[in-house]
Length: 460
Image (cartoon, rainbow, N blue to C red; front, side):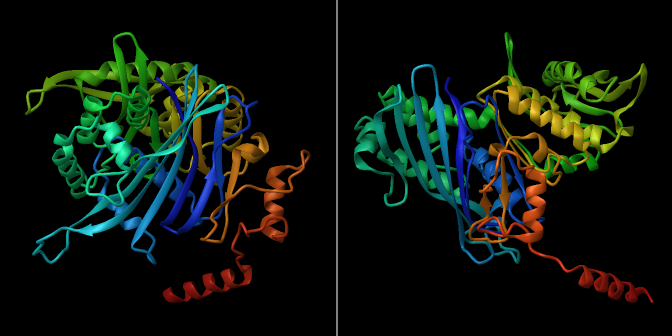
């Protein structure tokens, strides 16, 4: 299986990003691949994480949540995205360029007062290229283009992918319409890939298509604000990716932490393994702390499935308390720790985390990121407000949002080796003289003070 990395993301008309493009490629001397995105509130940081979350749904062949359609920029009817991937193995490196558009489509024949709608994925394109020993053996070629055909083009690639089987044309048309109506990708739909895997004889093309889908399903993880918000509703999301003899699994499971929770018996072994892994690292981050999962009994639910009653506890200095009494910072560390372990050890994994710093002590955060950037194998994409990592990460790992919605993401220029990136960022916020775009929309302290005073008069 090839190792997959996201190398570039371009976003158009999504949330408050009219246009933004950002490279995630770092220099070869770095083992880890990290991108930390910094910027003012409401300047497009979460839009980047949301676009990756959308990508995961699409390439996994899942239905895209309706809520994504609400994120199309208010001044546009659709949003568009482009992702460039590298796919490497021991013998060569391939590149894939995947683009698509998103729009809100209202359901037909809806007589209700509230119109139902879905997130439609359309105008998909997938191009590929291949290099062996740094020599281009397959120039960039458009493999699938869904924009101007009832099936897809180019015609030569249609014939290649389906091995000239004319009998499949009706099946392809049906698969394309079904994918659109159900808010799914056509290119990564089970229906199309089943046909291609049956008919296509080009092993390289099959490998690329199947690798991208498998990457999205098992190697791409998103810890969004929604995931973090679950902690406030007394649920701890535990992410996992395990590859060992007799146990291969990837995903996430939410465990209630207010009291006990019920989980399928089939996932008990996975959760126990994840907690065991975390307890190797956790006491090094929070001295003396480990967590445990107590099995409070088994029963059969209404569907006849075997379930287990469990409760999470924290153990520090031989004192055990329910995990619910720990701080939100501890809970956040526990939630993302297994993902950080996977990034450190697995080169094929990408993890995107929104507000990585939320509740985490800034010095600890900086040290964790420095360790991953020095020795980690996977890819980490995160947003943050905490500026400590700017003092520990190489500048190659950091990008910034701007106040310009037409050019949302930039890398700093004119940086000298001796520059402290944190101080440099502050200086640019205050002076705004170094970069082509402003990175902070200025606030007026006098007007802020006046606004506080005026707001207080409401209660007088």
